[in-house]
Length: 623
Image 1 (cartoon, rainbow, N blue to C red):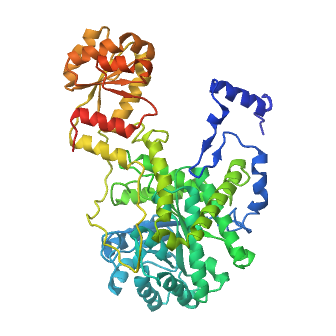
Image 2 (spheres, rainbow, N blue to C red):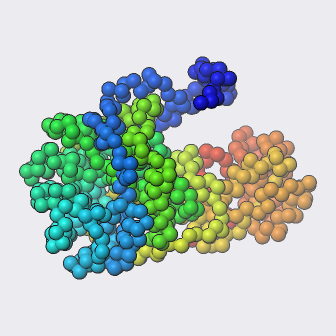
Image 3 (cartoon, one colour):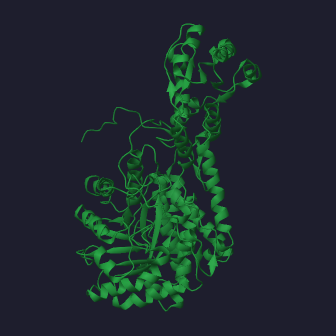
């Protein structure tokens, strides 16, 4: 084996730190330390000592506390279940999608059921079950239900369907989750959790491979919650079901069989992998306190790629986001993974979009071998430390929920919604300031790009939920939505472009020109000649007429601004500009430049939504 490192000096931390400090140019070292939504410090360099406190908690692969996965070895053929959602309203068409997915390599089907057909497969009677599942070998291709508030109503029909076909050994997942339904619909009956536990007791003997319950952290994630909040919500939901199962006579040793944790995973691979590991660590502690044997403390996890990260514009980039999220779920040890179609924010998936979703998993599984190692991130100092810190954050949040009276009470009183809203608003502020960016929307938006084909969704308002207990539902948001709404307004109005008044040579103004062009495109506004070079100010002003716009932006260096900004602004106004923008911080020149005709300043760190709204007003975009 060739030793490629032999001619290089051994790396030393002191040397690296000296170079890093030099690049900071006098800025404090803390500038290199990020912070997660839970306030966890994210350092630029981790050492073995950082992970030392986590060593005693990680355990061996497949052993309690299951931080490193539930099994000592993964099935090399199918290291995780490839679970595809099917929600086509017509049962017979849903059956077509199921068979296409199974033939394409999917191992499990999640059947999204809505008796109205508005947001899932319309299943109301036995014939609908037969149409939807015709020809599906349920003993080989397990079906999981996602019926939300309808689960308890349809569970009996599904039991009968399985029993009539002698499918008692099918690994069906009923996924009864009244708490998750309560969080998203805002209503439930007082005995729903008890009824869900009774379902587990009912199927325990006749369906030994079936599971009954789901503790779903997705409502917290999709409402903008932090990783710690997701873990806390999952734990609090699991604890509520644990108590209900005990009341229904289901022993603690059977809990791991009946309870599935479902979480959303975003594109930050190491953060999300650590989140899954932390959830298993915390749940093992809960089960230990409940008296479960060491081998019965594991948390089975179903990971679903995040919807809040998806975009309507440049949806092809969603493929990359979903791939990163799927990779995170795989190395984090999920037992089942669902990848959302890349057109999810636009509408229903076409066969092509479904194919891309399942192939994402197949490539990671069969070509990248992401599942051949049980815990690929194990031993990485950053991941081990982050796992412990996320576990601490999740555990603390679960305790807060319990202090509030439990997950149902925390939702009923609005406490949980307020806690998540605070994190969501902080994130949205960072997106508005472009401290966090969205490729294709806030960064590098491509105007006039063709959208992929997708299936239009039915324009149906969700039925108002009714129940004995009510709460304000957690909202399902997308980070890109505010910018997308502004861009859609500009497109609908056929907004004119912005004329670029460039000062100096291309190499001098290109940085600010690109910044301004990206910002305008994020709001759906095109740029006119952003790279043109003008020899004289009269030539620049004369070039504005063909742009047929009343808005111009001055771009150049600070030195060019000091010498020419005021005169350029005055000349542009004289040439017919109604609104003049300057790309850069005005500093001490603001008053003088405003008197000369500058109406707006754009620069990094300014609220991009506010900047675009002001631009739209200048362009006459009012709808």
